[in-house]
Length: 94
Image (cartoon, rainbow, N blue to C red):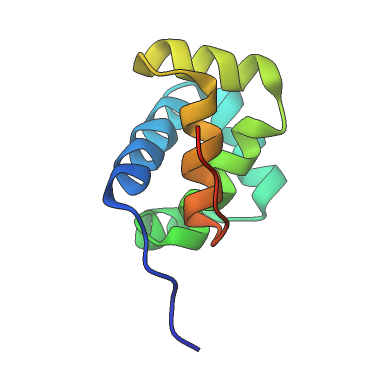
């Protein structure tokens, strides 16, 4: 099965959000526990759409983190939700 085409802007935003998420140890641990990723997997697969979508889904599932991340990155929370949809194969128009 062919991987879905990804939006470069969604990928870039997701990578920034992943870095933001991992910058705080407790939040990083919650991400690993919630997604089931191991640190080595995360390092090796950080650029893959599925991993990025999982990281954005993690933020989307906890509104305080979603809002804080959006503020930290200087974007609207809706942009993170849209990036998640784009990476997850969905479609979303903000």
